[in-house]
Image 1 (cartoon, rainbow, N blue to C red):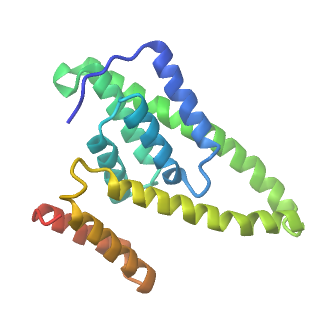
Image 2: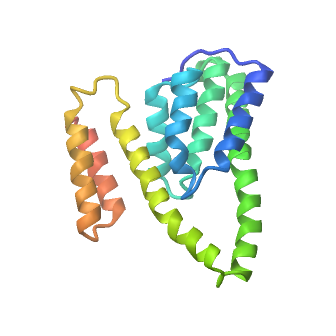
Image 3: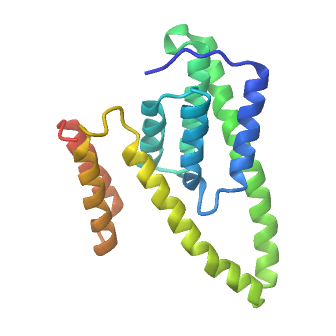
Length: 200
């Protein structure tokens, strides 16, 4: 469900710069930046609704391909909102494509460049104590960012008290992933089925 927002050229520039800055913080993948994306797009600028935010992540995670596609979906939704929704026709679709391009270029250019340069250097210096320490230190940081993202996705609902089944499903899914070797697509399918049946 689209919203109606107004965006200036400066707003598009701010969106691009925000995703550039997030790109450099995307340790463990773009999904770890979801809490700050939510803060910026939903809470601060009001360019997306909670529903659009969580739907973009759910669609990108459920679809084949890289999980960074949630960024393109959020850019698409921002552009669509700025264009007045799909009912506004091709101008809204053009703005949606523009939004997807702005966010994807912002998130991809710095991190890809930095990753290429850093991995070349780290590979050549892989026996250095500093490189080994950096790799060991990044693991808990990535885990903490993923936990924060999971917490955010579970908690961003219009009626948290009424949505207790989602909290229970999150806890059960976490335990299953932690304690078993159940394939994630099975869990995604079961979650989709429970949603389709209206149980969560």
